[in-house]
Length: 163
Image 1 (spheres, rainbow, N blue to C red):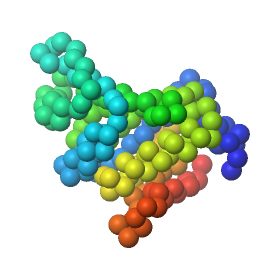
Image 2: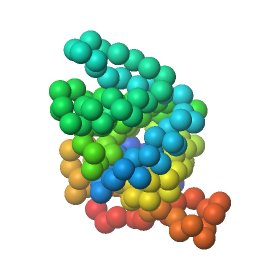
Image 3: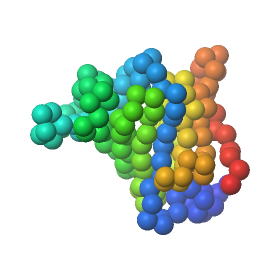
């Protein structure tokens, strides 16, 4: 598939975002995700006692506290080196959820960088990471399956999905 086809299929600018999600997260998967995020330049957004707060590191204790209290949804905002911005929200302990604005994926190079980054998340967490139409989980555009430990150095596998 060439870039023009990918742009039309995955990154059509129709006013919606694209969802990133991984389900069946557990404490080990979250630990691996947080470890992977330590290598990223990010901003962690949360609320402490009703006041918004920002930090350059994820405070996992605050994330877990908010999962229990459900008063505020902490999130991180990061930008890949090519310019694509991603937000990951910590809505619930069993699911990783993020969004990408398709207008940020302006080239095949940015597409490859995004898929590589999502593949790293799949490999680190051991969970399938799906890239889907916003608020339409049945409309998975592509997904990345964790590679087996034997395949060191190989990127996570991309599985095509039927439309």
